Amino acid sequence: MVQAYILIQTEVGKASTVAETISKIPGVTQAEDVTGPYDVIVRAQADTVDDLGRLVVAKVQQVDGITRTLTCPVVHL
Image (cartoon, rainbow, N blue to C red; front, side):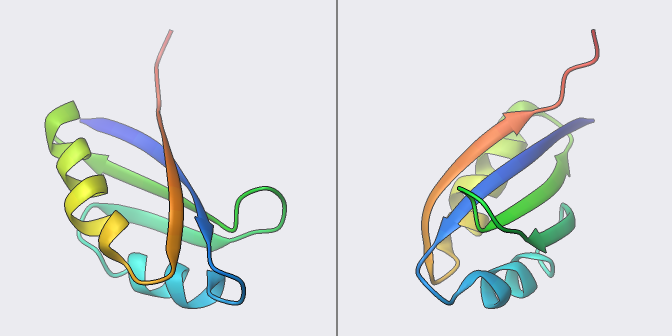
């Protein structure tokens, strides 16, 4: 299982709607609107890194109102 945080920038005033929409995507375990340089932080999981990439590109980035994403895979050192 691969887990990651996805940091999202949105259009002005869209953070809450984006977080709510993303929270319904399978593989997303948490989506919160936050303050700071990013507007939404998402915790997601997938079986493989490739599956995680598909989740981000095919589902998360397609949500209306998103301007940029940064995916940070969780590592266990």
